Image (tube, rainbow, N blue to C red; front, side, top):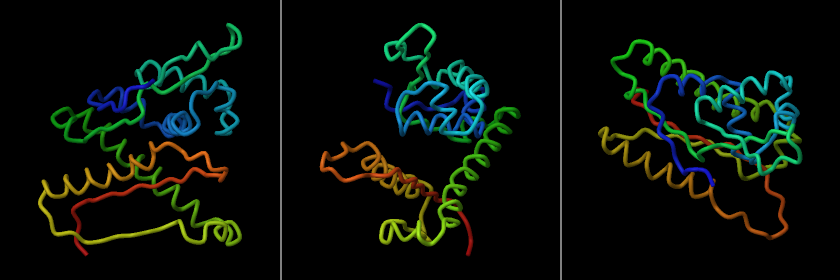
Length: 190
């Protein structure tokens, strides 16, 4: 069983994780569980060789590991995440010019990834969106808080999302689709 959480403080690990293809592979391994490069290639549309390259980079960073017990023969290589949740803070890279640049790039790529999921949903035909008449949501609010209060708010929100993400899926015969959800809280002005 993978660790619950890994806090990334090494800029090399953050750079390995931030690459868009690698991030997608990490997401697929989280949602679908262990997989081979061939299976991941089918899901991403990337060439098997390219997927294998990115899997090796993720393994070198300690973000995934081989799962040899799943292999049917010596040629088959299965991969799994080493941790369920990856967290990092730009503050951990302050004072190191290269680390700061990597953290800034990772933050930008992460935001593009998150908003990309929402944009793809918004671009779906109406008949596809009609299959989800009540669930998809958007919310926003202006809070007046201190840094400490925002951190407490974030912890509560993260705990709620984690509870739903890690819950035991009921065996009730209902089909459940994967749903991406994210939230951000940043200082801003209207």
